[in-house]
Image (cartoon, rainbow over all chains, first blue to last red; front, side):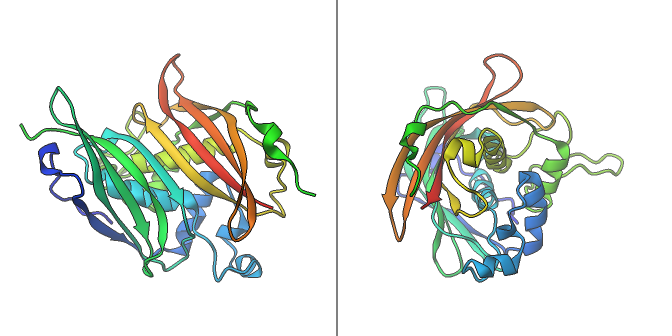
Length: 148
Length: 153
């Protein structure tokens, strides 16, 4: 659960500045049922522990879009308007399993001021599990208003 | 013998549609808490997600993934046996042009833009798909981007 926090303005950011990190979890296998229904994807790899174990995994695998959703939720929680999101680029690096805790964070890569005030911020973003393994990594960019 | 998928480059996939349903968004918000997008509260005076209101950006990957899955057949378009093979998502890039509205129908157009083989711990093909997700009005683009699929050999 993301708590509301003070939203930084464009002037508050600087290149190489770390973004605050937020933890999500532990992940709950029962969440995979509504997610499977939303995705219309009942692949047993996400729902059937025995099926997953027969394929060499210790448990069912959390759906990739759900991993992404937590990282999106994290990044957009920093924005004044969540739909100021401009773009994302993400690579799926590892699986998430029930009871995992996901830590999301990032760092400012670039700032592009706008003539109208504020500007676009581009950040490296990442998601790691409790063992420090990278689950998702990539970039996200968003419009940030000016304080004035 | 494994399939040569390079001949798939340039293939236009079928156009699919998806309705950003209130039920899906509510179910999603039951899993991923989004303080700015509370689920519809049925009590008097309650406010939240409903028709005409916005879905959170965190729901966007679901629309992209779900929409794209409707644009292709694993066997016919990717020459891949989904029942016995192993596939996973690779990279995804999305550019956002406007917010997603709960209740709206969107169309997803996609094409295979590249196919190449890579060697990690095992050998696999990467299929890159370029997509556009649009609203019902002409020129109303919501999202555009690329999604890659990893198909293990």
